[in-house]
Image 1 (cartoon, rainbow, N blue to C red):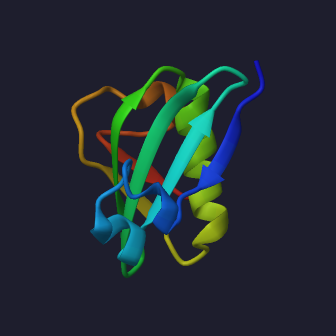
Image 2 (cartoon, rainbow, N blue to C red; image 1 turned 90 degrees about the vertical axis):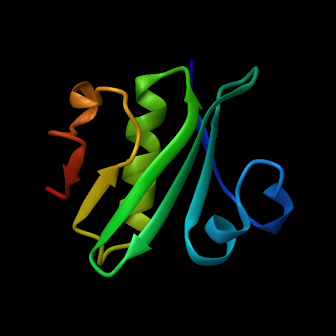
Length: 99
């Protein structure tokens, strides 16, 4: 099933903290039926922190990371702040490096 990504704005306050909407980037990934992932990125210089509350599809993680890197070309690394093993989507020890 095809995934769609939406960049969060102030109308998505119910999904994202104000800090993310004001200083970071939020992404909502959905399929034809429902939301499959909510992703928060907080950029700091050449790196960013990634958090997500839930995700039902590894492809959703890939899409969110790819879109974030396209939107923020100066970011070189993303540090995942959670506890899931994301090795299947390109993270090594919780760090994703731009290729």
